[in-house]
Image (cartoon, rainbow, N blue to C red; front, side):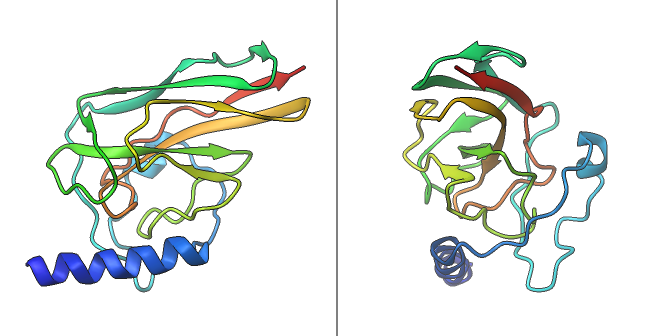
Length: 162
């Protein structure tokens, strides 16, 4: 089992560094929860999340008008936040999705300007954004940056940066 975890880690690192991950349109949370754990070709096993666990924004709130840099605080219930690479039950780390839909849920979350990783177990950030309207969404990833099953995804919020 240890060898298999190491193999998944190498695959995840390669995929994350390459920015791999096909984008898909955002689906309602109910449809996401019903998605099979390994539906895509080459899909990796997903870590189970406990019933009732959730991620959410503490700040800003949906519809807020803010100035840059934007202070963003991530909330979580029913799970722990740990650094990427830490294989611990009922844990993961945050990913902030900016102006994008959900990535393929059976693959590591891409790392790019629209998919910001917090593998250091951060629960907040300051994000410099040009004036405009942005959508934000949180997605928890396991120790390999793969969304849980079922995925822990926040509601998408919209903010206006002055």
